[in-house]
Image 1 (tube, rainbow, N blue to C red):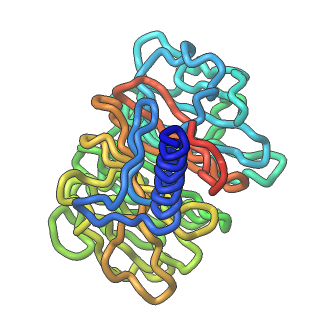
Image 2: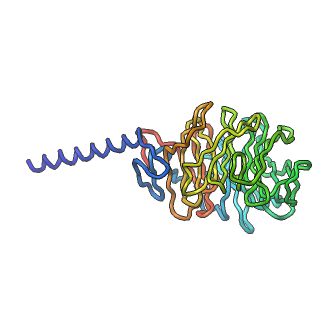
Image 3: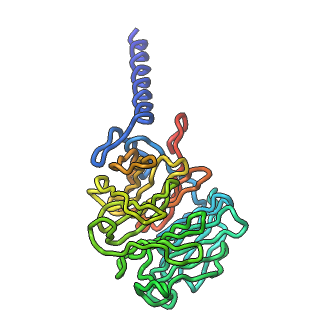
Length: 353
C-alpha cells in the first residue's frame, strides 16, 4: 500500500513538473528586469518563453576558431555560414556549412580588422559578402565586397583614411552594413571613431539620406553599432552608447521612435529580425545576453517588450548575430569565448539540448 502511494506521489509530481514546463513554453514572458520562468541548460540559462536551444554539434571542429570572433553571416540558399575573426596570423574569415562542416578559410591580406559581415543577393548565382573593416592600415576604414571564395570585388570609402566626407565617401570605424533586396544599403558608421552616422546609399552607392549628429536626442547617435530593416519600411539601429534602439522610415529617413526601457543594464550591440517577423534578436555584450523582443506591427513602435532571454555564461561576450531565413537558426559571434555558436528554434514536444 505504501509503495502504491509513493508511486501515485511520484506520478503526480512528474505530471506537475511537465505542466509547469508546458506553461513556461506557452505563456512565459519577461519584462526588462525579471523572468516568469527559467530553465537551465548546459552553459546557458533560458528565461521566459524558451524559443531557442543550443546546437552542441555545430561546428564539427570548434578548434578551428583561432581569433576573436566578431561577426557572422548566413547564406541560407547555399547552406553556408561565414564567420569573421580578428587576430595576428589568423584567417580573417572561416566558412562552414550550416551542418557544421568546415569548408574553407580566407587568408586575404585585404582585410585587416573585420567588424560587421553581411550576405547580399543570397538567392542569386553570385552572392556577395560585405564586410566592414575598422583597421587603421591601408585597407581600413572601409566597407568591402567579396566573392564567396574571398576575392575582393569592390571597396566603399577611402581605404586607410578615416574621415567624414560624403563626396568622396569616407568612413571612420564603420560598424555594420545591411543590404536590402533592392540593392539599397544602410551603414552605421561609428564604432568608436569620429563619426556617429546612419547612412542610406542607393544601389549605385549614392547617398540618399543620412543622420550624423552625436548626442542623446532624436536621430542623434553615440556609437551606432548595428542596423536592420523590416518589411514595413522601418530601419532599426542599435544605438549602443545611448543604450537604446532608434527607428526610422527607410524611404524618407524620418525618425519614428525609440526603444530604451529594455536596456537599462546594458546596451544593445546587435539587432536582427527573425524570419517569421515576430521577434527582434538583440545582443547585450556586457551582460552576456541574447534577448528576443516582440516586433511591433506596422504603424506602431510603442514600448519594447522582452519575450525570451538566452543568458550565456560569464565572459562569453556575444557581439553580432545573423539568422538562417529558411530554418530560423540563430548564429552568434562571441568575442570573449572566441567562437561562433548555433541556436535552433525550440519546438513544443522537442528536447532541450
